Image (cartoon, rainbow over all chains, first blue to last red):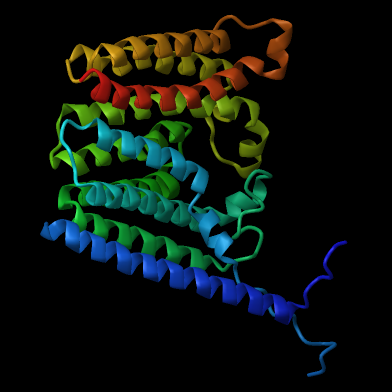
Length: 43
Length: 303
């Protein structure tokens, strides 16, 4: 059975939450990347 | 204001929309050729620094793709193939795409410079400028040679990969550039021959629209002929071994045969539905993947 369509405010909240999660993941990835670069450059 | 008369608030762009701005499918070819350039170089590079170099090439390509879509939003809206992209579909504001593109471009160049080297970073910066400004803004809407010029942008990744590993510009990265540069026109013109109406609708001066099919077919053949010596050059100059040389000869000979089929030997029943053009387009994708894969295989197995 198809899910009932979300109301716009609910959909808005869902999109912003998923965007924030991806942004947090990207920022964490960048921190890890620059940490790894620093280690590689020092060795 | 009553709820019945309130204007609906447009939904914010999804993270998938930002991802699609970077043209992930094009990025896969960029990553592959950049990685091949890096791996085929006759030096070993720290795996983390190598990973960062490829990441920067990919992110830089994504940034220039976002800038391309920011600039071409109106054109994209006129073509069926591109009308569903985030900007023409109205899922994102133009300034968001521009800022995203600038952030990715600047971030990738700075990271490349700090982590890998400033020569590779400078060429990455130039490749982004070349694609976003020289190609997209300046020459694409003005000349039917736009595909030849655009080929330059796609030709930078293996060159950057090689330079990221070696730290210097030598003949081989220039040859890698030349291979993609001369491969691009027959690849895209074969596609443009069977999706011509879409480009015509958007007013982009693609070669088949401006110069006609006959002229485009002849030019496809000219580039296919040129591909043979250019793809063989790394072998003749002693930079690649026999495995690459034999593969390049076979692959380029078949490329030439399929181009001949498009340019000269036409008129059969199957030609009316553009089957030779579709076949050449599909083979050209395989050709580039195979050629670069053999270059890397040659380095590790033969040389």
